[in-house]
Length: 326
Ligand code: GTR
Image (cartoon, rainbow, N blue to C red; front, side):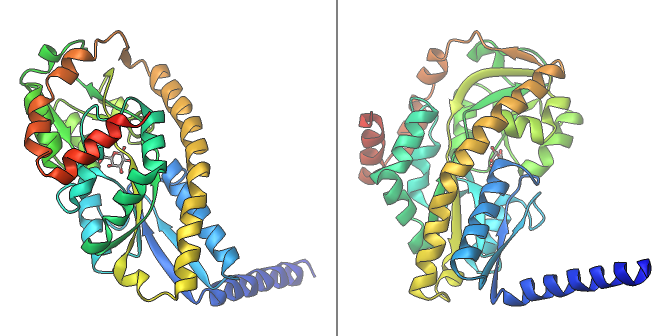
């Protein structure tokens, strides 16, 4: 009797599952480099849940976390061709593709994370989202990526001079390579997934990132010094492949856009909580945190980066408008 009951329950569960998956007329594949549970991963899952409810179960979103679909730069290519439908990435790897993303990837362009959120929530953010379209992507929403700071395995960095000759991994964008050169270090652009072993084996001395990434990637296990100089505040973006977008009805497109927008406040809340948890974990592991740092000399060294990368009138205007935003 007990066996029969178990069997019946199992069958019912399978039937429920089949009905649920049958109901998905369309499953959008979404990529993220971060592990399950990370705020960006959870935010896109939330977006999928909203979209599914609002389309009466017709559209589903499946999030492939932990770089299962590849490293960011490669997944961006695949998204362009519609192999991946949705992609949550940093704006950094988009710099060489969508010019407008460069302005929000510039060191010290924002006064702080709140300023970044205000800019990205306003008309400048809308303009940058729209700039993705001619390049084969539909910009849906921006997520918080906190502030990025340097960490390394060699010594505490307390001033610009300490970076001289150090090998520091950066995201794959010319801006970050030039930023490191301007600080006297040797930039090593490489995919995120290769950083842990590169630090561990001494191929590089360190890298830079926010609290949640420093913690969830495990980099804090191999890089014992973290300097809170906050040189970059780069927003994250959720894009959809234009190829996948064009297959949707106008109604479904609007539903996708709205669900993405509605995931933003959820993401921010998750982000703030995760920043605290990550910081506690990193501190508990005994990483030396350098907080007493004068940011001015780091900022002053960035003039050449701005001169080289902010060349068109369009970019100059965007930078000026970001700076003029309260
Ligand atoms: C993280 C960001 C990722 C990725 C990573 C990196 O903060 O969320 O999208 O860009 O940094 O450094 O490659």
